[in-house]
Amino acid sequence: MSCPICEKRKSKRFCPAQGENICTICCGTQREVTIDCLPDCSHLIAAHRYEIEHRKPLDPKDIPFPDLEFSVEILRRNQELLSALGISILKFARENAAVRDPEILAALAALAETYRTLESGIYFEREPNAPLPRALYRQLSEFLQEVKKQEAQQTGFSRLKDSEILRIIVFLLRVGTRETNSRPRSRAFIDSLQAQFPQTTNKEAEAPRIIMP
Image 1: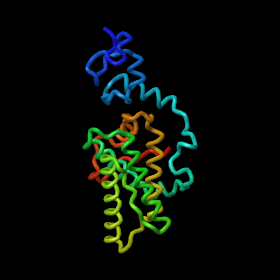
Image 2: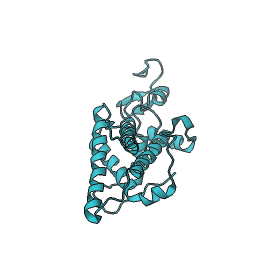
Image 3: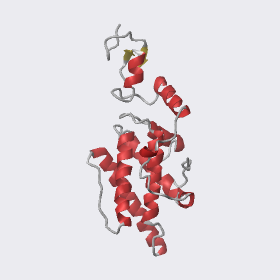
Image 4: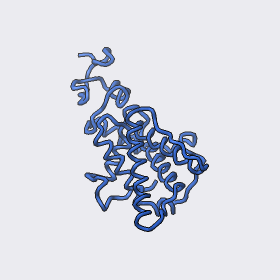
């Protein structure tokens, strides 16, 4: 039988997402593009493994906020916040089956833009237009505000600076940009968070740490 996608080549590979055999070329070219691949697909897992093993450093032009500099000390000092944000993103992805890497990266980029406005002294919301990125943006924004509020209630002031929050967000954005494969339906970044935080929720007191690149 011919491949149901290209209708040219022979169907030799079973596609769990399609529920039928497709050709190997369509599997490779349409994977996470027009095909909404299932996370446990053996061909997808093998492809992601290959991509990780042959990953090249990010092109400087693809690095988010390339002009923003921060030290490793900022990441270490805010490790708990970094982990909590990672877990919050993963929890959102679990609760919203349609979310993919591009939606997560769009939310993080918009949130970083918002916090960057604070450095100029003018606060301006940069909410994404699309529903899923906007929902994640609001969830993370509310979480960060709550963290600052609780810290202020406990100590009388908030030690968490907006400039440091900005750098934590940008760090996550850079990690996500590195981990994803740039396909519109990619879940590579989500899968990397799942590997870091297996079976966790943002309510757990002790959480694994995100590995710094």
